[in-house]
Image (cartoon, rainbow, N blue to C red; front, side, top):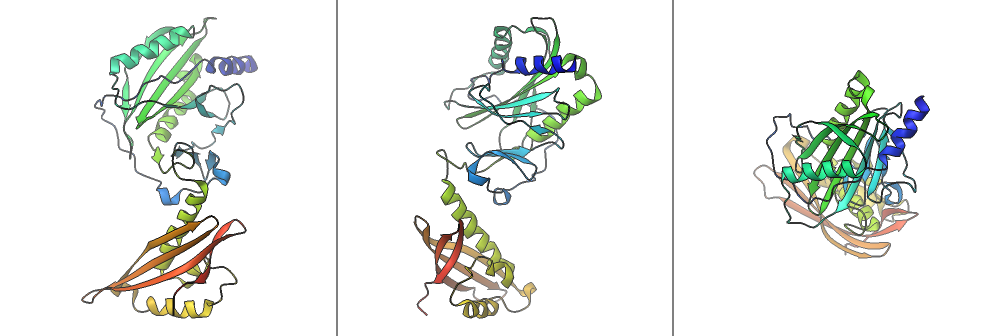
Length: 330
């Protein structure tokens, strides 16, 4: 019986597709504003720029967004049976309740009203032979760094008369439309596990975070790796830690002792009396080689800021960027 229910759920979910809309009206919703948990600099680089789950987050590299994966949820790898616009699929620990994520590229500047979206949703369900028994009022859920999610719930029956609870989420940003489609067996929707599934889905989606896409729509993988390297080196310079800075140099760097002496002099003194700011002030890229210039500014109260500029030759050795040689004239 359980196996039959899971198979029916899996088959039914293949019927769902995202709705082709471009933007949504802003409707008032009295909800709590989620606290930001992620920043672009903290996101890990997925191996080979593949989308997936890393450090408890689902990261979609092609379109540049992520959200936390609820604890114990299963990330189901997609198969040839997936919808063309589907990018991810998740299930609760039992596998009875599933949420699918889809992304569509849509044109900008074409507003669609709340009523029109509801009508499109209802028509889509009818087209897939679901009979709507009850429709709940649409709700809006705030996010930290993008527009609101719009969510609408339906109580439906399939062609066999089995009941289901369907939750449709949609978020428009630029030329992207993200849809999340959650389906729960009708006899589980009102239970504690069913309520928890939908509640943690809400918590995850409202923490969606955007960053630079890796691929044709954004930055290349090589450029992203180099950007992470240079930004990391700047943070290391500001840390006043010689060991952290040293991790960015190749083991065969010829003037390591000279660099260590210079850096310690640049950051010497009481940390409470001065501020350090490191920036990438120049970059020339040539394949796996690059020339980078960094400016370290030391600011002390009552004194003119001191600026130190250092240029290096970088190389992507054994798959990782490293500082190879100093290009300073003296």
